[in-house]
Length: 337
Image 1 (cartoon, rainbow, N blue to C red):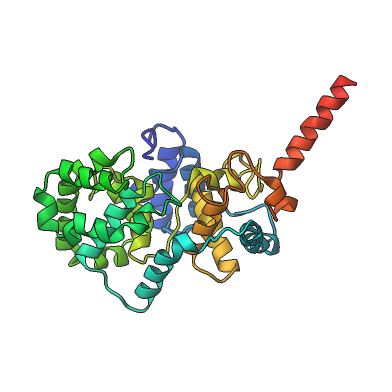
Image 2 (image 1 turned 120 degrees about the vertical axis):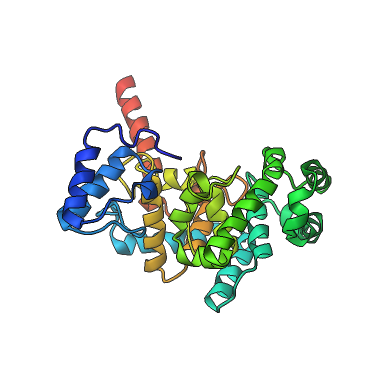
């Protein structure tokens, strides 16, 4: 979400000026507008103190985690073990994403039509994680969108697309607005293609964070496409990346795993933690995020959701949820006595 008050913190302007003096370049404020003022200030101070230029892979939190690396590494296999315990197939929903990443690593170049398909599927999947209906109707969806022919989709009546999607139960609460915006969004994609030579060059040159910002509110703003949708789109064209979610913010926060001090991890903290877990376990961050997400989601394994099922969880020893509840019970008993 865009930080509308990014220049209203009195401490920010002096730090931005000092950053320029130290590093001889202007701080790229557009790249961090989704962060809070406090997070931006912390980044600026650290860049100034260490005389380093901010880059998209910058780790804002020096002490990314309150856990030792060996403990942070162990969490990921234990999460998978928890889902194995209840016979939940966490690979089922991410096979396509994994294949896309593997294909890109092998040199695959995605066409305009494949990029458009990825964007449309990201939109259709809104609020539908773990729903097999879209996957099972892929052939029909391809036909509805005329194999993602941009010329057809720029002129077709959006209501026709909505009606056909409803007939196969592949809509979501925002489907009318999404389809109405499709022709305008295709024009933006065509502009990107003109500027970069191809959409594939665009996603190869720019960072996921910058693309998410440009789609959300920047140079290539797309209607009905926020940062989360942008990341989902990138994954579907084989970009190995990850994104934050309210479930992961809660899981990594102090009331659950306590990987960070705050009650809910920030977006930057979530991204850093996922990347760190991926490095420690020698695997792609896209897989780590997807599997941990399923561990939390109601429609998926639903082990560590809003109301956690701790009896099925193999990472209880790292979690503060039961500890906090036990402390509350003890205090209540003492008060009663």
